[in-house]
Figure 1 (cartoon, helix red, strand yellow):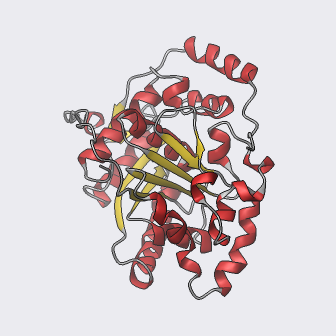
Figure 2 (cartoon, rainbow, N blue to C red; figure 1 turned 30 degrees about the vertical axis):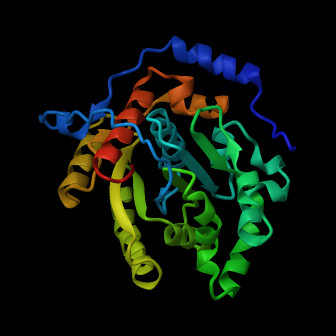
Figure 3 (cartoon, one colour; figure 1 turned 180 degrees about the vertical axis):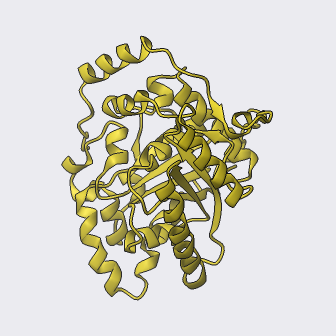
Amino acid sequence: MYIPRRVAPIEKEVCRLNAKSTFEKDVVTASSLFGGKAENFPVPAPITEHGQAKVISIFNQKGGVGKTTTTISLGAALAELGRRVLLVDFDPQGGLSLGLGVNAHRLPLENTVYYALLSPEANIDEIVLKSSVANLDFLPANKDLVGIEMKLSSDISGHLYLKKALAPLRNEYDVILIDCQPTMGRLAINALVASDEIIVPMQCENFAMHGFIELSENIGKVREVYNPELKLVGIIATMFDKKTLHNREVISRIIEGHPGMVFDTLISKSIRFSESTVAGEPITAYATSSAGAQSYRRLARELIARGGAR
C-alpha cells in the first residue's frame, strides 16, 4: 500500500507551540456587528443513518479568498458533529491535500482524483485517504489534473465525469465538499454539475463584490445548461477584520445587496490558518480553542440549521 509523505512532525510542533502562546479574539458575527443579537445555532441531533450525501462546491472565480481553508475547516467542523465528510481536492495546486498533511504532487497518478475520473476500472474507495480527524476523508489531487481539461472538452459527456466518479460514494457520506479551482473552466463546470449546492467564500473588498456579479451570471448559465437544481446556499465572509472601516462597510453592502444569502458567522483574519496549513491539520485540530476554530464550528451549525447539510 502506498504511504503518502505527511508534514514533518517538527514543523507541526513548532506551529502548535506558537498557537498556544497567542491570544485569540472572540467569534465575530454579522448580527452582533450591526447591533443585533447573534442567533444561537444549537448542536444538531446525531445522525443515526449515514449516506445520501449533499454535495457542495466551495467556489469563487477569485483566488486567495480562503476557499481551501473553508473547505478543510468547515469539513472538519461538520465531522466533529458526527457527520461523515468527504473532501474533494479538485484544484491542480493540491492545496487541500497539503492542508491535510499530504504532498499530493508525490502521489502516483492512480492514487489521485485524476485516475478516478478517467479510469473505468478505478476503485474510488481505494483512492480515498483518511485524514487525522475522525469522520473526515479526502480525495487528493495534484498538477496532473491540469491534463484532464482537453479530455473534458472533447467528450460530449465531459461535464459528467466527477458526478459519475462520486456517485458510489454518496451513500457512504453525509456531506461531500469540493474545493474548486478558481476559474470557470471545465473542472469547475464538472464540480458544479456534480453538486447540489454552492458556497461562495468572499473577502470583504470592493473588487470581490464586482466579481460576485460575474460569478452569479456563470452559475446561472450552469443551471440553465447542465444542472437546474443547483442552489446557492450562501456567501461566507472570509479574512474579515472588524477594526477596518472598509471591511465593515463592504460586509454591510453585501448583506444589503444579497438579503438572506450571507452567513451570519464571519471568518476573521488569523495567522492560525496559515500555521495549521503548515502543520497539515484543520484548525479545529491544530488550534482547537482559537477564534478561527470556533468560527468554523459555528458556521457548521449554521449551515445545518439552514438546511445546507444534514
